[in-house]
Image (cartoon, rainbow over all chains, first blue to last red; front, side):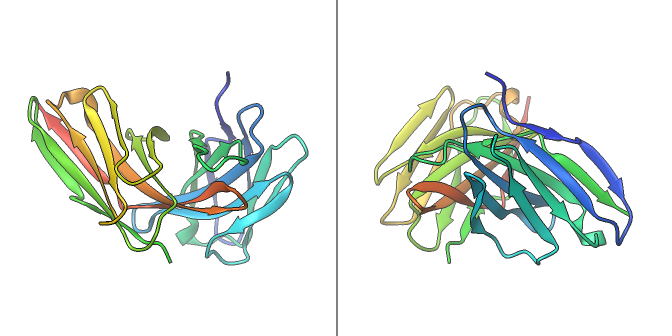
Length: 114
Length: 114
């Protein structure tokens, strides 16, 4: 079956702009998690959505937000972009209902902020 | 708060040799995961370790978990060039009955030389 898809794959923005990233999970998966990957901070958890509700949140400022739709697709939004937001943003999907869940990662969106 | 440390950060090894990557975590982790990342690519799930003494093997890779020592290891046997990649371990806290927040280690960049 199809894997996790993310769009767009690459994005260039300037400081102060906002951006929306999209993630379509594996069919049947109801949980979508978002991670930020940078050379300096590594992989950091942003938030997780399950059945359209944010179930868990990492330590990121309020400029980072997300939502999930009834078909489990998820979007994350970053407002007032800063240079430090340049990163690879990965989403991961899982069933979300079993405690041995494996998270399957998408290809990522590489965001560059100029 | 769960913290995960990996060592070494970089590992250069010759084909045919054996080596081990170590993953220590600070507090109780409900699960321990190993992922592989190729340059410019996403994360590929390798293993999920559920309980003390768990051992899993796939090809030349074997992962184990010692919850008392808060240590997981990824052992590479007779390395081949195709194993060159960055390997991440991740601890997990369970919320709401499902594993949905991964805390990643810094990653180990493995370079297998011919």
